[in-house]
Length: 162
Image (cartoon, rainbow, N blue to C red; front, side):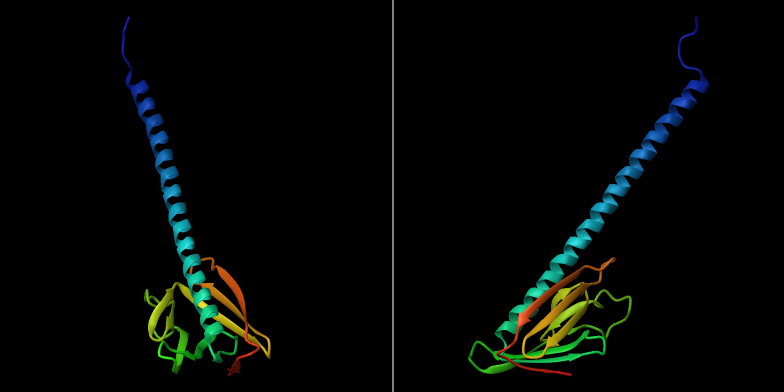
């Protein structure tokens, strides 16, 4: 009686192992890609939260608020006049970095006084309800974008918009 494997049995065994190995490889690849997307969205959410908290806090501290928006209410410049550490009224400004190339990694950044405040921010929308509050929407640059909404009371502040 012959003992051992025939060539056909060996080829079938190798083919089965290859199918199993490919399946495990693609499973691992999908898990790694999903983990990367999750990390990317978590980072985008954290940056949006930082942007929203920064805008809300600075508007609350401001004595005067000047809002310049585009026709779709997206932020052009948000200038806030507030007391500096020396007790002197000083203007501070938020803006979205729009003046760089489309494929630049610096494209989507929220700038506060010419310093990056939060990255990955595609757009900030600000709507002023006269004598009441500012509605703020922060949209991230990830795909699909995450959107955070907030509101701040500005009844006792001088608010101008244009």
